[in-house]
Image 1 (tube, each protein chain N blue to C red):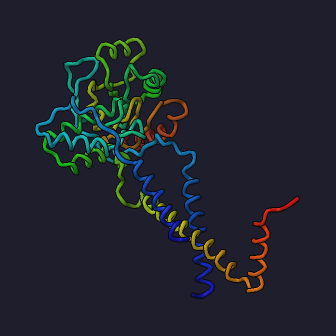
Image 2 (tube, one colour; image 1 turned 135 degrees about the vertical axis):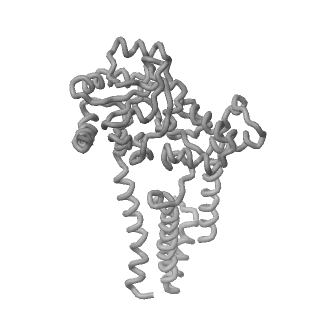
Image 3 (cartoon, rainbow over the protein chains, first blue to last red; image 1 turned 120 degrees about the horizontal axis):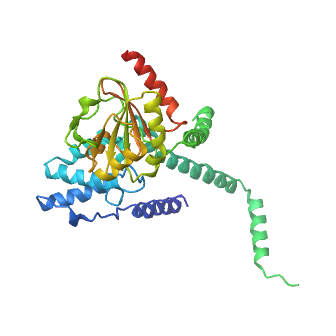
Amino acid sequence: MFKSVLTSVLFCIASLASLGLPLAQADIKSYEFAEPEMAQRFVDLTTVLRCPKCQNQNLADSDSIIAKDLRGQVQRLINAGQTDRQITDFMVQRYGEFILYDPPFNKSTLVLWLAPIGMVLIGLWALWFFGRKTHIQGAMLTPSEQQKLDQLLADNQTPSRD
Amino acid sequence: MTTTMKRLLMVSPMLMAFALGLFLYQGIGQDPNKIESSLIGQSLPNFNGQTLLSPSRTVTQVDMLGQPALINVWATWCPTCRAEHEFLVGIAKQDNVRIYGVNYHDQLTAAQQWLQELGNPYVFSVFDPKGVLGIDLGVVGAPETYLIDAQGVVIDKLIGELNERTWPPLRNKYLSLLEETN
């Protein structure tokens, strides 16, 4: 029983995770790069960088002035030969860690990273706690009680005549 | 396993859920648009720009030093800037608050006209049509107002309208900076 619950839980997690796959694609045709490999980096960076104005969109997705400016900035920095790390550092310096969709593990994001583990632990505890209770009750029937129960169940299944 | 350990194990998820609840509770009512500026405590970025009213004149961050001051990011397309403009003129004229403008993503003539019609609260406005200075300041959108000290260190930042309600906390900091400088 525990195993089947676990399987369905895992299935739910997997299907939720698939919803979060990056769907956004910037219109990169209007951005020119010295090398084709840079265009891919541009797509990747503008997907993981968050628009500071419209907070539930990334830079690739948003049409706000600031997102356009920052896309242009990412393009310039890539063409200037900066690494991905240098570019995200540039953004964090100005807009804070808020701009990262994938926030680093530190003091202020501790709860963010650990809370899901806590939730899973609470869930596992609930499974264990409630699973254990029914198991004990089931085991506590004496043979005569079990016979009575079987009888009752059998009676219930015979069609009633009025 | 001792009984105490068992009990502890039993209640610990509840305590965790409680702690999580407390954490989420303190987040209620917090403004998600309020992003901690990473520029606070740091010096103004280097820049080199034209001023709005005399485009032949170039200014740098050095021109904003010497006195504590406000830096106000504004644009003619921004309704909230229009709403706060009168207030800015008021504190500049009556309370002698030094305000520098950053004219953000705007058109030269429209911005010049705006200052002529509505009054000019700014010592000067930096013309920033492409938002280059905006990015270095960490501007998210107009209006934004920064408080800097005499050395050009950013002390505080306000996102949104400066008015009777939002100015007093900034003013207190501004006045204490003014005292330190004089």
